[in-house]
Length: 438
Image (cartoon, rainbow, N blue to C red):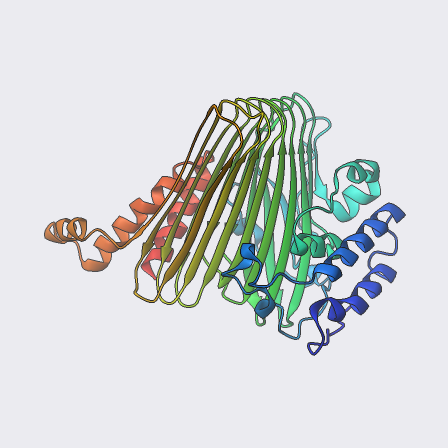
C-alpha cells in the first residue's frame, strides 16, 4: 500500500482516507475491540490535530514542519532488506527482534530457550493472534495527540511479557531499521509487562540503512512494572539525518519496583522524546538518564514527567547535552508530588555544553509539590568547555582536538556510567568517541 497523502490539506484530513484504507485492508482481521480503539484514537487526534508552538509543551518544537512533506502510508517491505544483522546487535546471545519501517523482519530470532511463560514476540501476530485477551487488558489510548495518532495507525512492535518470579538474564534487543526511497510515516508500538518479582533488560537500537528520503517514526511504548519488579530500558537513537523520531514512553510502577532508562541520541536531525512515569506504589525507584550530541541544524527535545503518587518513593533524573553548529536542545522536566506522597526523594539535573555561539539550549526544570515532608531539587547549568582544563591538557602535549574530545567524553561519561549492561556500555563508549571525532 503506497497511497500518497495530499499535502494541501490539514494533517488529520490528509490521513483520514488513509486510515479508512488501513482499517479495510491492513487492520481488517483485527478483533473489533481493537478497531474501536483505533477509531476512538483517530477521532481524538483529529479533534486536537498536531500540537503547535502555542502549546507550552511544544513551545520550542515545530511538529507541523516534520509532517509537511508528501509522505506515504506505512508499507511492508521488511522482507526485501537483506543484511548481516548479527553485526548490528550489541550482545551475541540476546533475544533479537528486528523491525523494518515498523514491520517485523523474518530474521528475528525468538529463542526457544526462554523460561516457561516468558513471551518475546511482536504485537501484530504473537500478540493479536495468540494473546488477544492479554493485549485488550494492557493496550491504552492515553498520552498526547501524537500518541493517539500512534494508537490509531500502529502496524507492529515488540510484545514482551515476563511472568511472576522470573529474572530474565538474557537481554532482549530490539533493532529498528529505517530504509527505502519513499517518504513514509512509520507508526509502531511496544508493550512490556513485568510481573511480580521479575526482571528484564531491553535494548532498543534505531539505525538507518540505504535510506534515500525522509522518514517519520512515531513510537509509543507502554511499560508495566509489577510489584518488586526491575526493568531496564535502553534507547539508542543513531539514525541518519533523514529520520525524524517521535517517542513516547508511559511507565506504571507498582510498589517496590525499580525502573531504569537511558536515552542516548547521537545521529538524528530531529527528535522529540516524551517520558511519563507514574509511581503508583510505595518504595518505588525511577532513574532517568539521557545524553544527546548534536551539530548542524539538529533538534532534540526531551520531555519528562514523573508523578509521585505514593509515599517513600525515589526518582533521579540526569540529562546532558553537547551542542555544536546551529543545533537546538530542549529539556523540560517536571516532578509532581501528590499530597499523600510523603517522604518523597526526587532529584533532577540538566547539564549542557555549547560548542558554538549559534547552538542553543532551552531548559525548564519544574517542581509541583503538594506534600510537606519531601526532599526535592532541580537544577540546570549551561556553559562552554573549561579553558583551564583545556590549557592543562594542551600543556601535556595533547592537540586541541584531542583535548577537546577527552573533556567532552568525560562530560558524557556520567550518563554512560549509569548503564548497568556492560557490553552496551562498551558499545556506546565507542560510538560516542566516534561521534565526538567527527
